[in-house]
Length: 206
Length: 206
DNA sequence: CCGTAGATCCACCAATCGGTGGAGGCGGGA
DNA sequence: TCCCGCCTCCACCGATTGGTGGATCTACGG
Image (cartoon, rainbow over all chains, first blue to last red; front, side):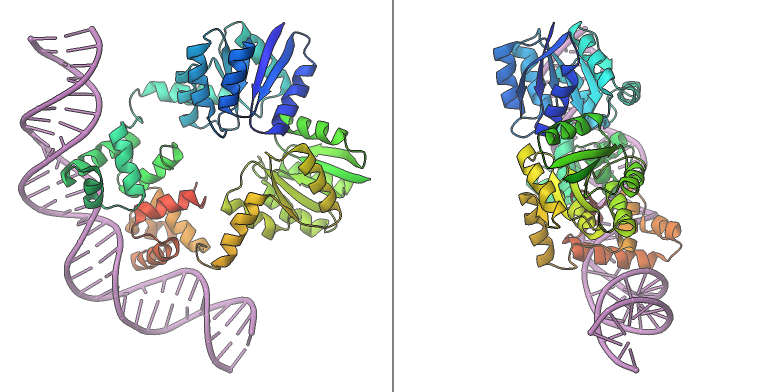
């Protein structure tokens, strides 16, 4: 019997999932949580076989919760189930220790097979996610901005000129320009406007 | 007895909703659809009292589906139920003729009360949605870009220089500059980079 | 100990952008 | 009918940015 914990902030989604697994004889939902912090609490208390984890949640998001769970309860498999298949969500989730990544448009049947696979320690990825991963692996560090570069990009997105950004970071204007050049290279763009656009598309900016 | 049609692309969400309304004696789910086009088809065939409509869907999105339904079957009340409470989704949905706008983190009880209200022709808005609406109404045209301005901003976000954008739209470079000045004024920014950032924050850009 | 990655800084120049103050045409609503 | 919003276009100028090709320093790991 596979013991399952559902972590999702939408009561309706939780209800749908509970309903779905009611039909599976080898899976039992042992608990639910409405945010990442609650999810960690329940997971450490219940020690389920599999945690079905949403990513976008209040209080503590799914990636952070997954990372914490992998530390505290390494035997619990975290299966990410989210609406978003953007490149930028997949990698952090996998890095955080998720064993699988499914999208919410998965059919109930696929979902149950994925939970069984996760319980066995096997990885399951949604097809479209696999695509993204392949693309990411092909160019290793490309597309990954350093913390400093993210700071610079955020300042530019907020309307700062190179000079303003330099003052804000207590460095020279020349350094800002250099950082921006690196950002352009990594994001594959030629100017700050499209760098900001890419930043939002890859969810590097808020 | 209130006859309800559920339009949502996630099977799991549909399941959760069906389950929720199973407990309501005065509401019966008469059908389901997985995208906007299917939703229109079912709604015209079944003529339910209320349609529970998701916004982000394949084939035809919820806003477009709502607009079409208001034309073809004016008696059917469309109640929007979505994950997103962004400013930019609310207004189009209401303009398209939705009678209410709820978020998916609503409790089952709230949801049922909202459906009953919609069936009576009353408007129901999620609290956070009301906030956004107030803000929008306070400053009328401010923050609302014209179609042309949105086109220009999208081109700029995609890395086009003013010259490139002009060619793409078959107009002069001077016009692009003028459009951009208007965009800066409306968004309260001073350069294209932060205009793009604001565009993403207000969900004007993709 | 050396290579690598990240952060910092420099100079120079062409290209682009932002600011300002216009102007004309066109269509819909008062 | 007239006004307003929208789209189009013009000129000029200073400010800013992007491109290029460097350089030094630190921290980290093999």
